[in-house]
Image 1 (tube, rainbow over the protein chains, first blue to last red):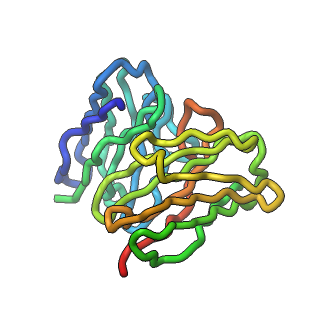
Image 2 (image 1 turned 90 degrees about the horizontal axis):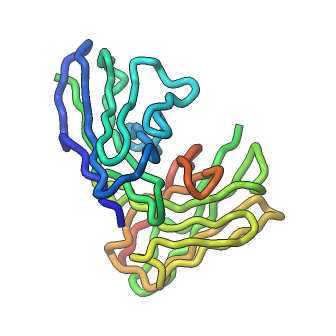
Length: 107
Length: 118
């Protein structure tokens, strides 16, 4: 299985801050990486697909980059409604695996 | 707009079989892949397996010996059976759609909590 390692596991930031989360794959996955947002008690929501493509309707303050084994997810200006846990997920081969999640809090 | 809804017992006894159904509304089950994903309380996400509308399946090797996923196109539903459950199978179970084997999960159902306990 491909291991997906996210960092940090938790993050505290202020409204308006730029927030960056990284995801490292244990082998080359090209751009086969997605980012999801999960709010408490809710299902995950797709934000970014193919490493850098913004899902329709998702605010432009969210972005993704990277390829191969190293990927980055960025919120350019943190908003109160962005409080959630964020997960990366690869789909290069089976089984699909997720990162362990990054819990984002407001400072 | 496609919506998914999980249903099934919220409590299952150890050693028994967990059975859940995902009902697809607002669209056809045809031409898509349909996955089950679970999340133990306070933990991360784990893909369980998928079924293509034709009935082709693929399972996570870590669960393969206990998992069966089936589809009923006439009802626009697909189902998960997980046998010989233990407390470690306690989780929120989600169903989700994907358009091919190599793509993203979207949309997801709201999830259903299944607790394994006597």
